[in-house]
Image 1 (cartoon, helix red, strand yellow):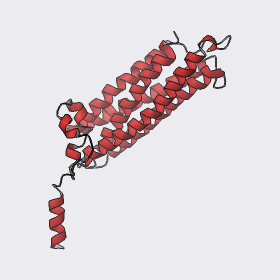
Image 2: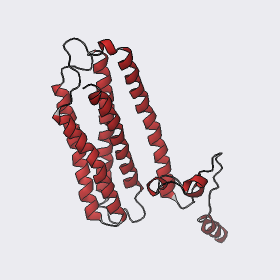
Image 3: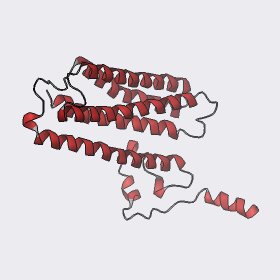
Image 4: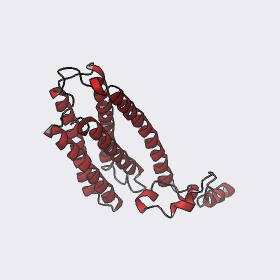
Length: 231
């Protein structure tokens, strides 16, 4: 038993050697502070659970981005190939309504709000964290309601040629991710009411914030393709 305890105490400071062909630690020092948080230290300290978990979640988001990129490139290819008859006769396609602009501003602004919420949690300001996270949840719900309202105003449906199928697929898949982000935020907000829940770490809140930034960045590309290109 004593030998096992000694091994555990020694193992707490063990550094996992980075055996990757690219020495990431060599270039890590040149990265900005906001980017360093997503990379584990020297291949991952044995006690650096937060750093390793965030790195793993970042890799997950990169895999999600590949899915979005494949959908976006498919849209681009179809749009260019069928540029002459992209919109069926009598169909105006997606329009840059005022509601769409407001929706976009609200969603992108929510990134700053949720980042402020995470910063508040780091500084132990739990009440401020709850308030800001509740604001982000409300902004996300506003976006989904606005998107549903916009869908009802459109003069085409899912089966209206390529413009309909691609539009609803892209916005619907993104809307699903917005919904997932809201659910994650509700979970993080609920956990904040558990005494001492965030005393040992806040990986969940950090991962949720990162996921929400990802959702916002994807919308910037979709907004440019579906609305700005259309006009």
